[in-house]
Length: 322
Image (tube, rainbow, N blue to C red):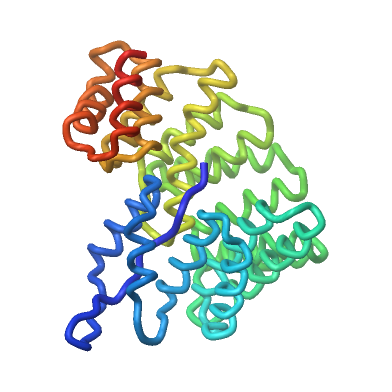
């Protein structure tokens, strides 16, 4: 599923520029995650004056979402140039270049994946860098240089931040194929941070890598239940965690109750009238008994009653008949 980015805009009125509130950023970000691009498009069209990092990020991801890749590339390049000293810029660019790499033709992929790696390297040394960004750099070092460089930075991260130290060490164990150590680190990380989104998501990914799909589904569900509201790609990672729980049920025949739980979380968080949310509701109705799918039926009935999109209403009606 293609997804969009964080909210940014400046209200324009009587020649006065008024920054959007933090709450407006959150609301718009949620709308984009749910597949509603109208607000992002409106803000881009109405923005005036010098662009903030949030504005650049909104434009980049919007254009990736609507498959105007060349425009996204141009805007992202300008963003990197204008805010090249900020860690936030490079952390975002790393994920954005990777997204672009997924969409371009095979002859261009390597170039954009390399840009993503270079951005990861810069994120860990830029101004206002954090242990989280240092983990990005350590991961990139493991792909571009001798593993000893990743080991050295991983030790440094672990000495200043326990949580991100665990994640960096799991990355190193995976990269060096020390899967026994990686599993021990994963269990230790969960024991110390049982309700942390980033820890649960990383552990889930690790279990998936070593072929333990039951463990992967379990920890993706825990990540889903511990939503993080952060930068755009963190929010995307949360949404993907919830959807991967359902994937393991649909494609691998694993615990349907886990998928029911993840879909219930999604429909509790997401309430906009969108095709993506109708699809989530339809999945929940398919998997759950009526007593456990009320949130889906209630959502679809609201769409039928209140949406002005006749095609969406028809989709909701069909979902209820499933």
